[in-house]
Length: 546
Image (cartoon, rainbow, N blue to C red; front, side, top):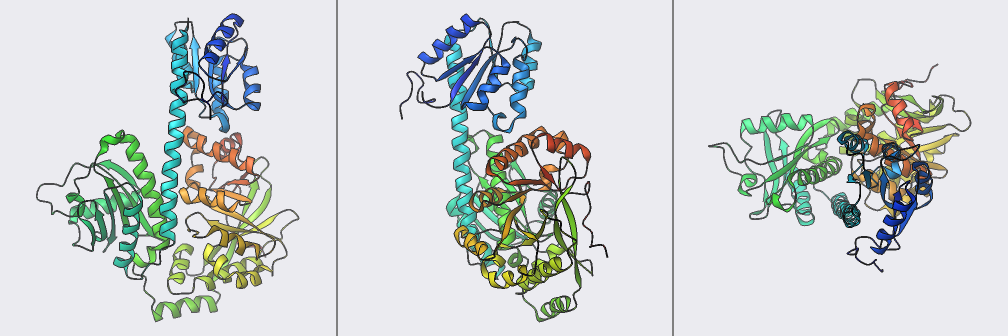
């Protein structure tokens, strides 16, 4: 690869272009020459409208725009770019000669990354363009490396053959994480009861692996459990309170830690903590964000692969008999929630969900069934009932049923027999939280099921959803409701969902926003490119009308 003269390798001459938007033809020509001599591929235009047309057909790496353009001015241009998923993070430098601080503030508030005062010094122009391109490239590489590390760790955890003994299961997971991630402490702590935490397995760089240990001090246990019930967090470590007993966590002399809850179904069963010693290697907020994102991902996978073991959901004849009675008595029934075209509100399909007569939450009942070896029986019975009792499905509409990856790969013949009973278009929803160790085997198993489509559920709840989407190539992607709730008042979530909408559109996938309850949410989602939705605003999950 050849780099342009004077770019320091930050921007190849044949890479994405610098788009210069300036209505003064002489100044435009002068700055274009300077940028090209510095090695940048440069495209110049005289209006904001022409700039948008250029961006639609050219690969642009950075925009340098005058504020006082005729028609669409520089502020209007940056606002237009920030509304589009594909340009929402494009570096944008605004030039102003007004000397008016309010203009600068308005431009930065609209989304500009930097500004240059006119008359522009050409050396400063080149330096600022180079700096923003270098930052963009560096950030892309950092994000890519972090995602690769987390993907490898998640895949490794998903492939572990875990013991039913909680301490052995935690030991295997902690050992794998310690080997793969850049942290000086990893620990899994189980809830002994509602108010006490006990280490199952911990690792630190100085003391190595330690299995088990004494329960944490009551006050500390209560505080950690309370915070875990509220959600994951990251923080600076200040050290133990005077007189507080030492343990592997305090022994590691940590600077920053992230903690995430581990669930078995809806039940909080443990917490995962990962931490680092030297916070000076990155700014504290950046490091906290990285640790927190990693902790959330790993804890989510741990809940799936080890939640039952950590909760000590051991097989018992009594529970197995009771669950078989639920199956034999048909003490469950399907309900159906419409999935609609967001623009019109017209149904395009229905998702089938399971409800139990005794009121047990479905995720709890299915998790307990899986723990005693009846997971496939419950899944297949639920799917069979959903197909048999489905409301009339019109031509072009579909029926979506939930499946686990294990059911698809390990019981595909049984699943095929159930699916063959349907005479409608079927979509199989695979949750983001369930790991898939071998994507090739999963794709082959899906092919054996016949004419079915795949949907990835809960997208955005963790890294695994992105891996599922890339590896499986589903027909449908469903946004987790944590992204859609109150999205009308959250620009950051709007930017994230807009990016997913752009990706789905380019990939030919249907993007469904789950949990939509308010018209403001629906309007915002439609405005950023989401085509389909599901939620109370369009209809609750109800049994078939008879």
